[in-house]
Image 1 (tube, rainbow, N blue to C red):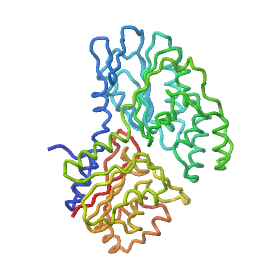
Image 2: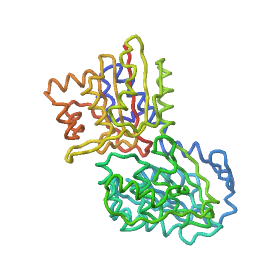
Image 3: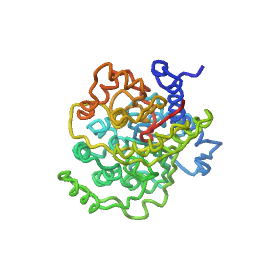
Image 4: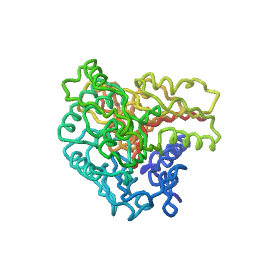
Length: 427
């Protein structure tokens, strides 16, 4: 019997509908498993490295260097070593955990706010790729969380931490915050390509950004940036974020002529896998959006648009990063738990429905991936005399669901493709 990807699956699966919703969730997590994705996307036959159908003749290169940053990068580095082995000359990646790699050095940094640990890793990444020649191949593992984990200097980490705190209160999109981040770093916004020039660069992208805006993943170190200092200044001024030392990103075409970016994972892959599982279970399935940036109220209205259709059994699926403006400190939990608690408040759930919102990396600003919500959740909250409004106002959804016993625990998944949402209605 296959081990459940949800550690507390049996504890949570107290009804048929809960079990089905959790199985659909697991299908999404399984589809974005980093090692599986790399083994399916990349192969080596002799000297020919094939990546999603495109061939690279390794005999043409004197050195193969590997660098990476983001939540998926340690697992991706380990999987890549299984393919390339001793062909890797040097490497360094920074993520949230160490792995047992032989040729690629792994660093543990901090997220969502950068720290000096991230700078140490950034210095090693710089050492690996600097002084590269046209006979070098640089493979770059780019994944969600890389914007915080990849730091080019102490100045960047200090400014990055300040920017994160300012944006948390502003409630803006990842594109806006990453526009500013690109102009604080020598790595981001194509800066890594300038450092690695004139090497051939292969970017392996594990996207966490809704809407297929792949140049925003980890703030686009392997993509040409089409924003300017003026764009960053405008965002800073409009949101009253404070003072920052901005730099311009590389614009010269020569730095981008020998880069090959491959998107190996995005939230669409996870959502499509969940839809496939739901259809196997003979449930009418609709993908609402994979680009859900709305505030929580509007996002839930879209997901629950057909909630009053009591004649149908269906599954609605969505993905994105719904907007929350955090106005108070001290609470615990992230977007997904907040969405779940909002569902309780708005009384969206009926006796036949189950709602799940979860962070694909397994960590919704806590040790929980998200929460499962149904009529039992509401009944337990009433018995415990829990005031939903109080928990919402304190941004303390984690402790609410901890008391009702509805937290979903996966541990770190080693993947990150935005948040994922499931609404199941079945009689």
